[in-house]
Each structure stands twice: as C-alpha cells, then as structure tokens.
Image (tube, rainbow, N blue to C red; front, side, top):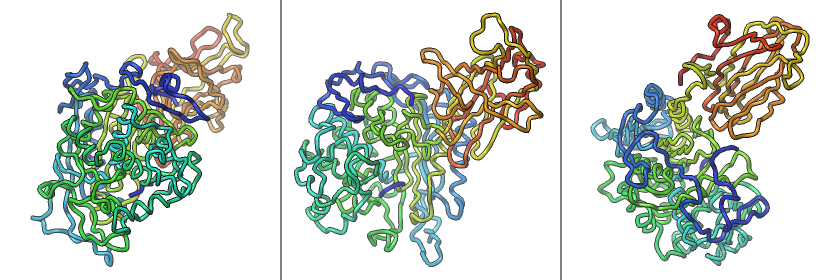
Length: 614
C-alpha cells in the first residue's frame, strides 16, 4: 500500500575514499567500512544494560530513569486514547500499542483499545459490525501487527548489509543484477534510487491480478518510469519489490530467510516474521474487511494474513510489505540502530553503515529527505521529534517507527487503523501527537538559572513575550563597542520549529505597541560561525542548543521602544518550540533592562509564554 541542515550526519567527505560526489549524488563502491569511520549514535541516557562496549540494551524503567518528564508521557497516552473515539467521525484506530523510550530504558509500553473488534464493515450504513463482546480481543503489550510499509525498513537493512559486504553497490544499475529489469526504459535506474524513491517508478501497479509469479514479474519488467530516474521523488512500492529481487538473486536466499538469518535471529526478535503461523492469530491485530471496491481483493476480514494485496499475491513475502512484529521487537531494532548497529553481543551493521541510513541522499528534493530506506525530517508523523537526523517510516495499516539520534529517543505507534475499513481514517494525527508528547518529555534546561521563557507547542497560535517601554539615549556610545550603535539587546535563544511554516520573530514598536517592525539579529553558539537573521526571524532547526542572540538597537536611539518575541505557528505541525533566557538591554554602557533583576522581570508581559524549568 502507498502512503501519502544541521546535525551530526556523516558528510560526503567523511565517507572516505570509497565515495565520489557526482552531480550532487553519491556514488559508492565497496566502502572499506570501519567502526571508527563514523560517530556512534548510541548514547547512555536512560541507563540499561551495556554488554557491548557501553551501548545500552533495553530494560523497563520509569520516565525519570530514562531522563524523561513523566507527565508528558502520560499525556501521550491520554491523547492517543482520544483517537479511539470519533476522529472526527470514526475512530482512527480500534486500538494501539504505544512504546516510548530513551537510551536503554523503555519508559512507556501501553496497550489501548481493541486488537479485534469488528467482524465486518457495512458499507450501506458506514458502520462496523462488531463481534460479540466475548469474541473481541483487547490490545496487549505483545500484540503483533501487520507492519505494512514499515516492512520496507527490513528490506533496506538487508540491502545495506550487502553494501557493507561489497556484494551490492549503490550506484550500480539494477539491470546489472536483474537484466530483465532494464526493459521499459529502466536501464539507468540504480540501487540508490530504489532505496531513496528517486527511480521515477510510479507508486503501485496491481501485480496481484497476475495469477503466477512469472506474470507478476513480466508486469514489473515492462513497467516504464513516469519520471526520468533521479529527477523526482516518487514513493513507490515497486522500488522495494525490485530490491527484494536483487537481494534474493545475489544471496541465493528468499527474503523471509534473509530476514530471519540476518536480523531477527541475531537480535532475538522472536515475534517478527513474514507469514505468522495460525497459532499466532489470537495475538494478532485484525486489519480490514477486504472487499471490492475499496480493496483489490475480496477476502473478507483479514486477520493473521498480510493486508497488502501485492504482498498477498507474492505469498506474503515481499520487499515492500508483509512483515509482522510487535512493539518490543521494534524497540530492539530501534535500539540496535541508535547503538550504531549492535545490540547485546550481536552486530548486524557497522556504525558507518547505519550512518548511510540516517544521511539525506535527497538533498535535491527538499521536503523529501531520505536516507537509505529511512525517511528523514518528516513533521507530518514525526511531529516535534523531527530533526534532519530523525529517521522513521509509517505503514498503511496504522503503524510507525521514529528514531531520534540527537535525543537518543525512540517511539513506536502500532495501530490497526484499517479495522474495519481503510476509509475511516485519514492523515497521521495520532502519530504526530504521540511524537509531540515524547519530544516534550525530553527536558530543555535553562541556559542560566532555574527558569527560561517557553513559547509552548500549540498549533495555529501566536505567543508574545513583550518588554516594557525602554528609553534609549539619542547618541551612540564612543567607548569602543562594535557595531553602529551602543544600544543592544542580548539573550539566550533556543529554537526548533517546523521549517518555513512556524517561526520566531523579534520585533520593535516605538509607539503604543500597535505597529511592530522586525529587528535584525545575530545568533552564535560555541564552535559555529555566527548566523545573521536580517529579517528578524528564526525558523527550522538550530541544533537544539542554546545560542546567544544579539541585536543592534541603534535605529531606536532617542525613542521609547518596546521589544517583543513573537512565536507564530500554522495549523498543521509543530517543532519542539522556542525558549528565551537571560534577557538584557544595554545602552551607552549602562544596563537598561535585566531580566535577572526582579523589578524588571515583573514588567515582562507574557501571552502564551510560560516560565519553564524544562
């Protein structure tokens, strides 16, 4: 099924001698991977066992042990439960399993709602036909879900393993491995383009309509790109189906065998596999009442078998869909990747290989950032967890996985959102809401003192933090200050907003506060060059570090001026927000305003901003 910077990322230069930059793309031969070639992502925040060089394995613990704020994790559950009701007309899911952690600590693992609720869907009344109460099954921590497109991550991991071993090359044409693939104008599509959805292939074709595997492959071989390869981002199941065929060709093993041998068995992910046996069915979340016309196949209630039609047509084993798993197993996978490819005594990838999955290869397509297999920096489901290094994926059935190396956090939301029918849900609001709450649970400590001003994380809002009227001298100071005037504003600033959509504005008014104009400013942090903000605006990603803001107030000499910070958000998604600390205004060598003076602090007017210790 289809679905609608700055950071610690490995640079092209750091990838070493095996890499050649070609026209903004990466051409990789067999890279001489070494563990020291890339920075380790795994941290020790949140504790946990450390049997492999100090990298944590998972344990259950409290939010405090994970370095998270408890009330925000409880809010995560509360918000998730609201989607069990009308959202806005029907439930977004019948139930879900929520898992959130940091470091080696799983601080939240909570089932809500029903794994099995409906026997069928009545299209005439647009209602679900419920099983009798005694036949309904509640969600449990170990409920297994059809992951749908989250399966693509496992195929991608298997591909990166082969790249690491030198058996697969990113910039080699797919047709070099699968000669029949080159028909229909696909001869120039590369392995990298499959992994980053830049092959130009359309999203999906009904392969399941062909009764034989040979017929399905003929459809794939004859398929032509709808865009020239490498010129556009087009999310496509066909990319990962093709990658599956390459993997099976070069390894001589079927994809389900590769998954078991190379990932699930080494990591102890015993509840993760293709084609779960019938004995698992009571512990599997049901999906859709699959009937024409909304489904391509007339199957009735799908429960314990893969939901995706093409994956079903391939016998349940496909590169784009078909993996079943539970929240804990996915947390093990998340911890493995955040550890740099190792969990306990088992290593499935080297750190430099993991870096390829967390590095944006789609710099030519802003908004469609993508590593090898992983989507990056997608606020629409990562919410405030999104950074240029945040990696994840969603599945059509209602599943998602998000990893943030910067905060060492991971979030799994598994919902059965096509139960009883796919038309009952749209968008990704539960995923984004959960991610917002986990992001908020990671503290931001004030730069100085016990409190900083926080603008909040509300969407479709405008929050203002306004200083009292300040009278500045009419002449510049001659005491050696740099810049065109002596009057200056200084403060500490921390920001992380949805890029271009939400922003912080520094503004000034020389009248009664009815007319505001932007104040240009500069920000700087240790180890980085100062950044100019000539429009008086900060938006996007700042590295989630405190910066020192300075603004020249020479334009307001000889006037009474009011200064304010305004944080404005649109109605869709938000980042972690904005913090301001230690506000100070100086003029001709004297302090005009200092937030650390109680009488000055009491004159600040805050609308939507609150003092915050975290």
